[in-house]
Image 1 (spheres, rainbow, N blue to C red):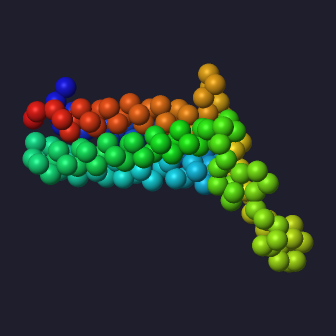
Image 2 (cartoon, helix red, strand yellow):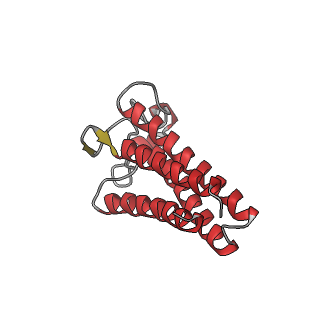
Length: 159
């Protein structure tokens, strides 16, 4: 597999994972804060892949971009692993989206009494969808780890 094809596959992989996340969201599985955190590195990986293909993956800049793509995929994989651990209650997550959620002490009386515009809080420690024991965060971690390998292959492959 050439470096160019590897970059194309890795960037397309991130694009497909983003498309999957948006599809689940359109089906009513609303994302929590940590779900959004996992999307940003995928977006970066897609942009990095496009830049590497436009610049030319055989150049030194193309190789450096492949390493950046690997870093982006590793970051989203790490966030996914952390999020999956929060969902399994292996460790605590951010207090803003786990446990009891929003601190009622920060709300005004009007906020507490409002019934028409109450924000819907999606909890980071609740699994909304699962297949074969892995949540969406777990699947993102696994597939993103595979993408790390493809990016590293692209970065270390001789033109």
